[in-house]
Length: 117
Image (cartoon, rainbow, N blue to C red; front, side):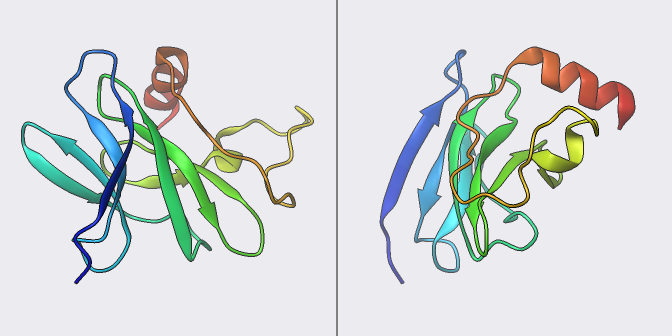
């Protein structure tokens, strides 16, 4: 078992930290809070992933790797590909590139997801 841990982001209120850790069944996406660590499910189709940013409510963003880059958001219960949250016809293409990533998350995305989810 690898006990390496690499933090990448801390929430603005200081209550959540996100990153990767080798302590939980191989390299895993992890969010740490006062309640302890939460292992985050990888985005669909990803064989590797990195959690880069975390919001003050504990939502996590990052990117997974596989045939293409898979930017994702984790809402505390489920991991979503960001491409599935972007309305069609916007011109954004997250499905066929190799370098897209999510680095930070803001409250407007959270509000929109809660209204539609």
